[in-house]
Image (tube, rainbow, N blue to C red; front, side):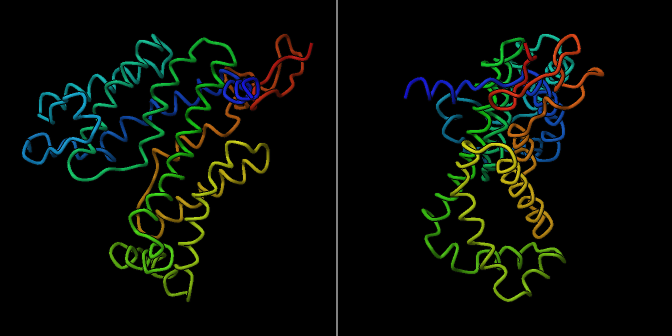
Length: 287
């Protein structure tokens, strides 16, 4: 069991996947901090509204104030751009991770917690560990991001039943959401008899089955990732709620290393040799 668990945790992955995912994540952060967790800016002068979440309480983190918000934004964005450029990848990466964690805790401590940021925070902490490391270190970092993605879905399903009971899939949950913020598309779907009720069960069952993504490969895995990406697209189209930080981390399941980098294909070995795929999408030259 120990050997099998090690092979699963440290399944070789091309470091190129870590590099590409890191660049995407780092370049996404400024957009997230301005648009998606931008409530931090508005709460900078609202000390009475600060209700720190558990981690913030344990670390005794102060609430937002204008000087802190501007400084934190500058540090995180500056370090993210440096890390994305490939300079000081570990030092800049860990600076981004610590700074953005503080930013996310502030964003979630003023009355609303967004679970779509869990995988993003995990990614920021684990991706720097695989910089200039081997395929097993890259595999461990990618696996951690994948687990965070799956945990977001599975724990979401658990929370639905824990707090909403079986009324969540059997009641008017989606109808309530559409009535509050539904788009034209959402209203159209709601007009189809039984569509929203079926959708509630599909979402609950899919989130419960999400751990299967960790143990599937090839077309089955890509179909699963495609399903969840489509689910988030449909959610945005119907009620304008997106999970973009989480969707970014879904890329950890895809063979990003096959993308062209520096004019070379990741699927080619050294010195023009053909390559074989090993482990979880990693590549190595045929010897």
